[in-house]
Image 1 (tube, rainbow, N blue to C red):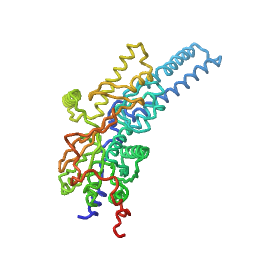
Image 2 (image 1 turned 180 degrees about the horizontal axis):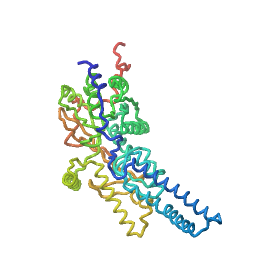
Image 3 (image 1 turned 180 degrees about the vertical axis):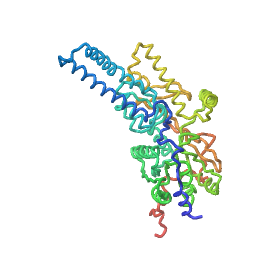
Image 4 (image 1 turned 135 degrees about the vertical axis):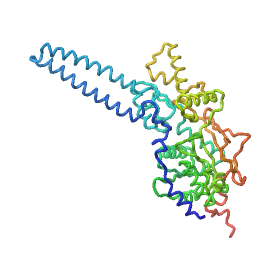
Length: 445
């Protein structure tokens, strides 16, 4: 089977959009008051206020100005208009304010909108999502605290891997069909360039005709480390083409991100599909490393996991696996309650969102997985894991953990990385250069 067969396989791939959420920060649209409800609700409240204020003011002004309008009936109308005006000025803004819960959960775009509104209203916002780097600017979001992960923390995880293996030449290959892929690409590019990494990006679009083989051929002319951002099915085909091009013998490493096991948005990043390509895919995946949010292992989390799973099954006939976003949501209530209790004991003002928010920042709390460290910018220092497939195993195994609290990459003493053909990690640059024409390797002279 030649390369063109694999290329056709990829080009004909279609992704069923209905299987996925439209945006990807793990922004479950069924959460309380999603963005598509906030916008029309806010619009209706705004129109109500404008029409109510203008209409009632005109009634009061007309009756007060013209002598012939000053009748007993109209005096009663002035009283009603005045009462209505007070209701509009006092109750409508309060109602709109309360319609946006401090725990509103939505995608980066939604958190952007809510964060700006909350800053204006002096409300604390604690969210397990909102990963975009734009949200790191707390001059615009002074009451926003992010409890899950953010793109800066993901970038630091990658940089710790590069530092460990002395990799400085990197290519990022991204499918641009999903917002998450684009956010990852942009964030990693910025962080890598700032850290002095020699990085290049390449883009493809699975909704159109594309040629992964072309990108791989270009990538191998400039790096041995390839960071990929795409869905699980696309990545498997990506690796099949890399195998066909001879790029899975240990000279290259491919790093993919999948935030948690059972991720229905990005799909399955394993090699096995029970088809005729499984054997080749198993070999190709020897060159794959995966970045994932670290899965908690404490007794408190295990108990929480069992309780949530049981409640979901018993009360809602729903089966799922607890993921880091659900954990972060629960922890958001825990730490908010802690700060509220502190504020009450100190005689503070619970309506002062900025003060409440600053009590959350630059400190540690006890969470389901031990310590929750929120930095001085209001973002959690998230933990990540580095995973590997050993041989023909279908299950990824954790070979290292990045501890956000310490900013360190700690390797597992009992499970090492299975490098292809036991060659060890790829060199940053081949001894004879990417094209084999390094003068040091010239044997003709």
